[in-house]
Image 1 (cartoon, helix red, strand yellow):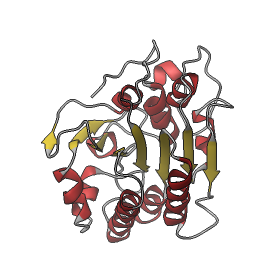
Image 2 (cartoon, one colour):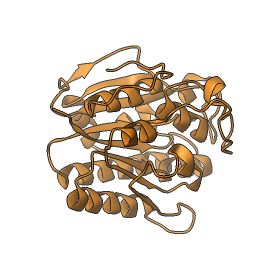
Image 3 (spheres, one colour):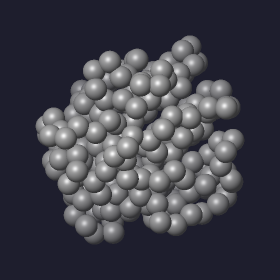
Image 4 (tube, rainbow, N blue to C red):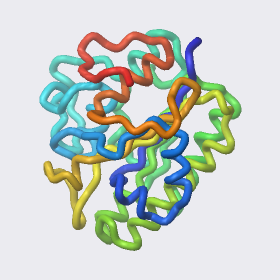
Length: 255
């Protein structure tokens, strides 16, 4: 039987930031998850290229997005939203950074809600509430929730400083609130697009390239650490949970 999935991405959340932020929920997540704190993202370790690789399960050299400016693919690949839509799955998209709007082709997303990260405070909490309301009322098959404040704080104050760690803790509070307010039959995936160092990211340093990936739900073993994971594995895994085949070009593996 097909599962339902919520994918939550905390922009710029380093695994050590997740575990050192002082939020006990981080340890709880690991206890109930199949997880890796050494998942590898792609180069350049920049937000839009990383998201394109997550949703299209190929590297930037294949999808062609090398900066935070979207350009149409020369040789188009179906992304996760597109593939799920082909099989009549109901998709929701909740985000706070406008450049992500092209992750799915027009018509592939049933509901998309945007709160501008740069024009309001508490945007992670507000977009989480929107996602919870949608799940409670619409019972979608797949929801992608993007939380962007952590990356913003990293650029302003620096990765792994007190402001950054406090923001990571706040993002984990959002994840906990969502989990407590949606049906228990949803599988939850928590990850990040990249890490960061100093006040930047985009290099091949381990601090930039390493992300957490935690999955908990009916089909996943609790407290199980796995090795060798890639950001490109997420789309095939979501598709398999929803009993949808991977697009033929996808390079990742099903976890």
